[in-house]
View 1 (tube, rainbow, N blue to C red):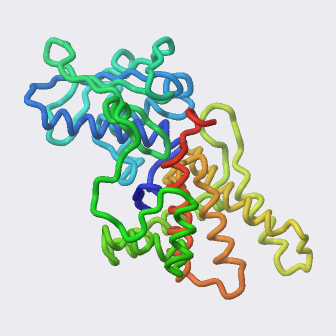
View 2 (cartoon, rainbow, N blue to C red):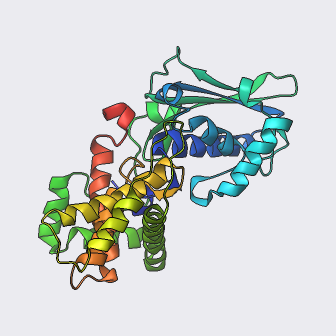
Length: 341
């Protein structure tokens, strides 16, 4: 079993990896299917089912699906451009994805929240359809958003767990027992084994640049959350708290007022900063889901900012170890909240 660190930790957008990143990725895959098909397309439609329907508006699933059909991807998401596309769509009812003709799409009629039809494969189901000039469906695909931004078609899910069809890796552990056994036999740490696996597939340079970018996005997300106040979107008038708590913690530094719980306060405010950015639809890193996006960067940021002797050289070790453990959970159980709770 090999799940890359870049599969476990993806750069994406909030508020939910299953409900925003997954549908956007599914839509991108559907556009690729359209580009490869020998048909003349004139429009697209979508229906959301199960959890994607019932919590879709609150999790911006409708918005993510539309933007995915317009050609957006989570890791290159441009908020300003997305707002322009949605504004134009409201009046001209047309999407313009690359390498496809203009596609009719009216959000009021072509995006359906189907609360009554439960797709059988997973709680997060959606159907994407492409139509011809007469409005008849000529291409259709069921997708499931299975957690952490991972997406599978109906056929892929029916065939069971995703299998590793790539070249073999030095340490192919599939369970925690296998991982610990290989570590003992080889004398290597979990991070060292995971690094060997990653480098055997993608090379040293890719791993270095990729993990550096993951941490940069995580750290930037913390910084934005610590310096932004106001009210979170969504209509519930939830006020941001991270900035105020952080300002207070900063003011207490050097005043000989450090309490035993201060470590937890710093860890919590870093995590809260990420969670508030996620809720606001900002750029985050799934770790391995958006719901858990604050925990890993908060731990790493606390280590770097507060632990004597901390070194940025250990960032990669931390991310590799976390990815190895997260991969075991995903492979043997589930990281989907809608599926596993």
